[in-house]
Image (cartoon, rainbow, N blue to C red; front, side, top):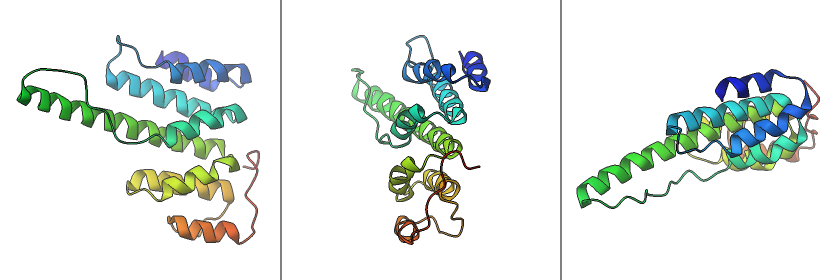
Length: 171
């Protein structure tokens, strides 16, 4: 699957976008390890960002803004074993969500669509430095404003200053 996703991402044909979106949405399979699911999701998101197709914006924003909290697994064993399994699953789930969000931010950077700005501003407020920096870099590319610090209030001021954002087609 990873090789197929990578190959589809290299095609310049816009018809490759739909299968890439499906690969992301249907990446979870009982046959795959959590690490493989994460790799599939991240590769699909990266390929979608390079496609520069408007229909990819919604899925990239959804992946970038997904909540970081994880649900405890539905495993019932002894109290100690259950606690250990729950903690391991929560750590794994949180790491998967974080890696997916970072991949989505890199894809939003590649996409360069000004419609993602409000979502990126929300991410700039987060405490996770890597997520905040990813959103900041995307904002810099999209707006062309490279002198704004990674702070949501500073970005609000800079965007209110009236300099228009670049269009997605602008390099």
